[in-house]
Image (tube, rainbow over all chains, first blue to last red; front, side):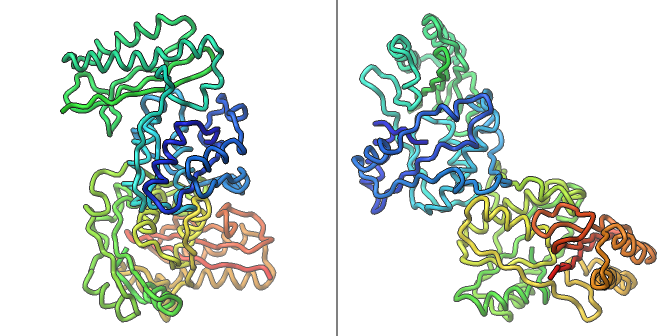
Length: 253
Length: 253
């Protein structure tokens, strides 16, 4: 989606270390934005993207115009059942269908051996993995850990929308996930108690609106009530008009 | 789908002439059968298929068990909008979604340079072409003309379901399409008049039930009322419990 930052660069450097040729796609995909979403105002800066991609070791930046990706209205869609219904899918209907369709196209165009996706979009990662398995797409999906600012805020192209005040408040997301980790380490396994604690911390910040705080199975993304295997703690929170997501994996030994 | 006949062999021989390596997939795909359809009784004979494939020049027959193609219930589906709503799609909801999904899987497994599809399944061919274009699948789709018995009946694995009497009646489909061709050659461009004539011919055969007789645009499969570009004349007719399809292209100069 472009507007690259150090998070994307960590994907590129990792790919650089593990492959002979590294292609970075930069494409703000209209298919994955809802009619009320920020497609037209989504930040774009291709020159900046090319510089960051090159400095992280990319060989090629593939930045097609929309007319090249969709020369006529697209009639074919790739959809993954169930996995797209929870979490971000609830407030963004059709979003993951748009993601799957464009990723399928990009895979067919570039035919990569490996594809690097950030763990930050945990649901996207789970859905892409399911699509790759179900459709026998000949690519290895490599997850890359979330890159964070020094105060813990997950790097995101949408962070530029934040006012200075919101920017100073936003690390509450990371701190609340750390709280979840500590509760888990102390033996807490009841998801409602963990979620209540996170809700309390985040709601204490004025101007925030919680979209969701959810604890789910790592692969199926089905919400769980009690933790007895590794889980994903995922959240999405609005800071006035800006929606940020973050997550953490709680791993059972 | 297997149960190969000379029609499939014409695809294989054509592929043999134009390629270094020829793979034939034999897979009765449960995903493309409706709950009331003939999945379990669909004819199967893998040994026979292997002999016919080899004699037509195939190098490999890929005949996976269902558990290999669908190791767990599949969650990902590939669907082409609109093109699947007419003709066979009307009486077989979900059929083309099942076809697209399995063909997408087979393309990813075999990674062919070219893929040969029979013109007999004209709607399937149009849908596959749309899918390949929309998803940038790196394969050239090659259409192969319909193979027919000496009396004109289009070869089909389902012909084995016909009683001897039905078998003797079934060439009415081909004869009616020839009628359409003659009317077209004589200058007729009004689709309702052509369809009325075909309906009359086919209905005259006792025991037949017309599913559809349609004249459509060659690429979009949208029904047309008046012919002013090349069209597809397509029909589906039941002979008691057996549904046969056939079609012809009427080409404007």
